[in-house]
Image (spheres, helix red, strand yellow):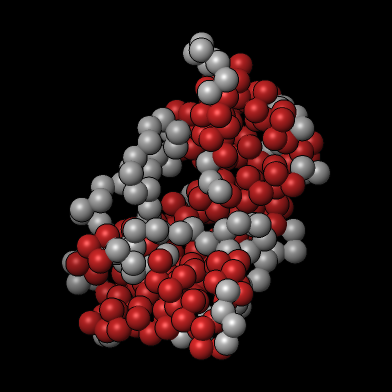
Length: 266
């Protein structure tokens, strides 16, 4: 349920003994997925191929998802200015492709990913300022990161896949009693958060609800006097039944376009 373009390409590889020319394959993919491939869409994919799809690294994640930099699982996320140009080009196709639900879903995802990268820059600056003892500057950067991530949460609230609500509801549906439902929910939430022991934060899900109610409060806790209570807070969050409070924008596609424009200077 992620990186559909990669899996479509892998599937096509199984039906040919020849190499695949991506310059000709990608426009066909876009036409099949969205119903069209305007020139801007083709250009957007050239930018994506040079940045986020230029190499595949294990553990793609943001620092705000691990609270502190993960020095064991090195991640590389190429979200340079070229990626921003790709996102802007992709979003510029809205007038001709907005009737495609798959285009809207992907536009929300790309915009959210870029905004999350901007939030990550702010969060990293907050960590740096905190390490230098610059408390005021650290909190300013933290607040800016949180502001952006709350917008990301609202964008993803309208995505059909990237929502904690779906994950929790499916887990609870397996239980026959309230006790079972609570246990299944706790297990499900543990899988996407602290599960893994040495591999804690292994899943690093990019989901609405999880950003608003888990990652953001955990970031704030780390910058508070209760930093030492982080593990206990995580365990309490896992065990307590969760209720969704995330809401989506009335027009998520147009909101995605406006938010990318607003935050691109971060």
